[in-house]
Length: 282
Image (cartoon, rainbow, N blue to C red; front, side, top):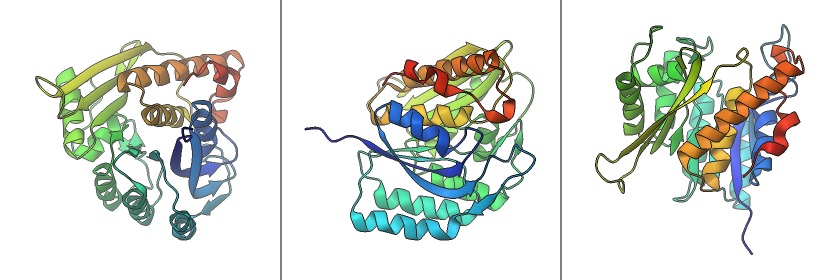
């Protein structure tokens, strides 16, 4: 009898607003992978609301993880999300070293910034630590801003050339990850994701690349990046081809946004993925 696959998801828990673990858990479960959360903090609701309750879990992360070590738990996948401090990044790096086996897929979603700017919580020291975390990844899923922060390149508003995007992905891959997807690339009425794979067993250049575009719809909503990373993680654990997984994630998010618009869901409430979750296939 085959053992059900498991993925450890290291992220915060927001009770309301559809983001982080509250999004990852149902998505990953729907894709037939057991989702095992490691909370980094607890929010009553995400920070896009005017007020919220926040409980920093940093000092409890290591004792929590130590119990898993004592139990000898094994994971087929590890995915990291938003990390709020240098210490949290260090704890997560230790988690990957302790639980990462040769067959464990490590996905780092480096949630650091957007629209050309890092988030207010991200210091230069944290950016350096995140680069060290990327070294441990098999797959990394930055947006354009995060790709620039990680590589030290300048972000610009004008249209990005394929040559520039390829160089960004190549530099990220040279840090360690075999697979890179740079998300949210604006292309007129389209939004694109650039997939880059570099493996020793590939012929010719040793690189496989693909630009996947979808028509822009609606307004940016919280939680879409968490949905994207969750699908990429579960699919990677299940052995789904990388570009197929990226296309699946992009199409599912588009359908989520359209359904949220149809149901007039407030932007702060994220996307109502529950309405179409049954369309997501492993």
